[in-house]
Amino acid sequence: MASPRLPGPVRQLLAALRMLLVLTVLVGVAYPLAVTAIAQLPGLRHRADGSLVRAADGTVVGSSRIGQPFTDAAGRPIPTYFQPRPSAAGAGYDPTATSASNLGPEDVVDMFDDPATPGDESRRSLLTTVCGRSRAVGQLEGVDGRRPYCTPGGVGAVLAVFHRDPGFAGPVVRVVSVNERCPAQPFVATYEGVRVECATPGGDYAAGQRVLVPGPGRGRDNPVPPDAVTASGSGLDPDISPAYAYLQVNRVAGARGLTPATVRRLVEDHVRGRALGFLGEPRVNVVELNLALDRLGTG
Image 1 (cartoon, rainbow, N blue to C red):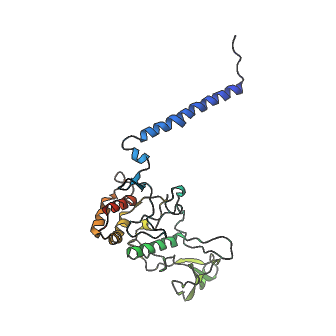
Image 2 (tube, rainbow, N blue to C red; image 1 turned 180 degrees about the vertical axis):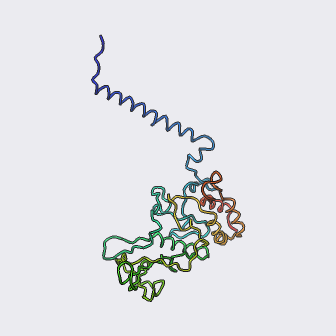
């Protein structure tokens, strides 16, 4: 006698359970084990384990795939080490907060905290961030880090110019240096014969014409390269350009008592070419370079 046929919903449920079981075994067990086994093959194991970088005593000091800061407890660059590019990931090179600043070239006006408003509203524009970083790198490396459209104090040289008539017509009646908070002395005293004011917290200068002042800073031939003042898209980039590495040679050599030629040769040995010969740009891995520098020791 034939066994009774199961109702349709029950058959569908059993089919779904069988599919769940099969996929769990294939995708949840077999596939991870297969990938793990392949990753342990010679030539792949190091990368699969995180591309860890170890000191001479075997201690793990980082990963060649993730940058890290070389600063003291106060956040100041350690003179005896090469510095990486800036990072917008968390407090800097935080793998759990990988991100970019998402600021674009039109972001040139800072926001100051208004004491009358709860919460901290302060925010540095991309222009001021670049200006400040370039100035700091220039001071650290002993070069002229001034950039176009930056004030001597390291903020964006941006004016809000108010005209008498709508549409930015008629004579200028008021000028504000929007990135210099009072009581700062504006980087220029007058603009078209009108005294330049400093910016007050909570002030609304959106109605003014935005004017960027070029200033004396250098652009394309600036000794401070772009990767020294801008963060990568991930905030974890472990590499810097050879230009930025060579810029730091004299400072590192002096701090370690080595000759600049010795440190320069070390940098040259760590310059990697373009991937496949044509992708990307030449680069220097900062973690690996600093580890080699420690092995080299001091003079």
